[in-house]
Image 1 (cartoon, rainbow, N blue to C red):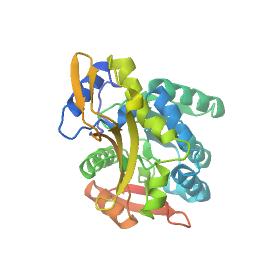
Image 2 (image 1 turned 90 degrees about the vertical axis):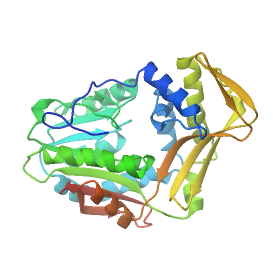
Image 3 (image 1 turned 120 degrees about the vertical axis):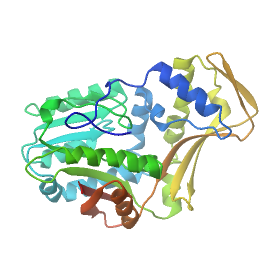
Length: 329
């Protein structure tokens, strides 16, 4: 999960996960005693569209709260990042919050959105080009949890990573440290006019009822998002999941301070994937996603393990969410 290169990010082919990788990960994950699948596979085109809908839901406070924090503190955030920034957004999705950032920055040099969902990424980038005709926009189709490359012409620029949406919470502590460490390595190779770093959003610990409602919305969009993964496996891996025989489950684990999201089997059943048979018992679950919740103190400690120190922190009045600007030490 290192982000290197000869100059900025360490290089690897900028391609989305292949069907071979997808099949390998699925068979491996579903063959374990405790079944699990990487959350990145939730985001095909349909999954990305559904997630955009989730972000608009009343219960899903995260997106609008983070957007409000960025809007209310845009001048301070822009000053902290500095002028002529090259913004590298990890897991850019629709790039909605990016517009708030780009509008506030002083003479940004370039915007490089990085996402695994190619069609969704390219469409979002094209929309940004219309609204920002003078800004260089170069989408990078890649899995940001693995090595990837950005153009070497940005060597020595004020390269600033942007990681909104509390996506860091989807990672285990070890994975989060590894990803942040790669970004810290990136910053140490950037020599801009200011101290470059990483602008990152993370969700805060709060009432479990508020947390669980955000992932179990009344309209059932979160359930559609989860179960779309089964539909994707049927389409791309020649699987025969009966989607109606599974349900979405999201619950807060107070011990590990995280929401855990599962797909649960509603009966004993056997599913064929490619040439392999996978058995499910009634009530057996597939873990698809974690969403860790932090206190400001616990997140600063996590960032420190990856070589970052806190430069500035912004939050909302209810202390629901936080946005931090980190600097590599």
